Image 1 (cartoon, rainbow over the protein chains, first blue to last red):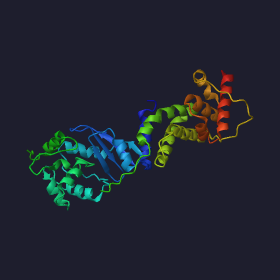
Image 2 (image 1 turned 180 degrees about the vertical axis):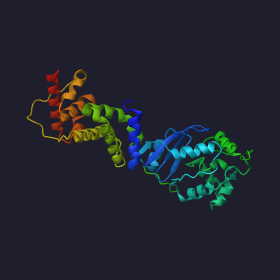
Image 3 (image 1 turned 60 degrees about the horizontal axis):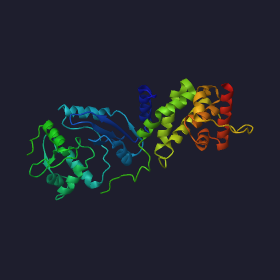
Image 4 (image 1 turned 120 degrees about the vertical axis):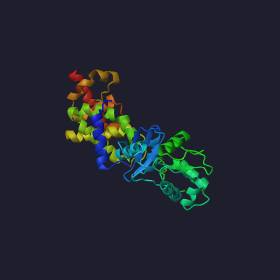
Length: 183
Length: 156
């Protein structure tokens, strides 16, 4: 590379200072694997278990001025969570979803650390009783897993059911939180 | 469900990918035009690109676009104004391998000729794009490159 890291960092800092970036993203190591994280000026907008393609996706939704840059607050809160010291996140979020998704994700954000709920209960909590299946879809498309704790949502029979990041990760997050292991 | 997706990116890659693709070429180009002063011009080039990036209509010709910006930044730095071509001399062209042999002599050219020669033979840009970069007509761009080549041959 002709452009050295000093020059590269100086450009990224200048771009952020000027406020001409739509979305920043970064890759963070975690006990459940690499996480792609992205944020706008309004707040955290993506956590992805698949880093590849994240830049395209955020460009489509939030704007093409996408730049990789450290997201220190996000990294710190996630580190604290994975070390077991943080039970709730203080990060502002940028959701930009439709009203149904917003109702469900807002209710989801209230599910406490270390506990689980069911799709049906979450449907009732979000003001859409009977929409358990649609709630499952919202969980599957959760743009900010871990921070919006869709891993705490299990089937009515206590089965793990599903997780966009894979059931191993769902189990690992619940174990980390000391939740009653689902059957 | 009304998710606020934008229709498409019209083939425009995320800026990060555009930046990674061109950052080295642009710095090498600006070093050729500006020497030690290239780094500030390089940063200014990509800041200008980023400021305008969300107003691009499509993702074609991004390479010519970023070289255009870089050239304008360099010409501003050198305080060069586009000027009409001098007397009409026959246009001289070079082969690319011939350029490699005299590339190191471009430092001695006047800025506009240097930019025209390097863009044409170093980066293979068509004269239409070079004209846009220099803020001149296509004929003027061709004449600037030609005059530069003639000067290089004399200097060899």
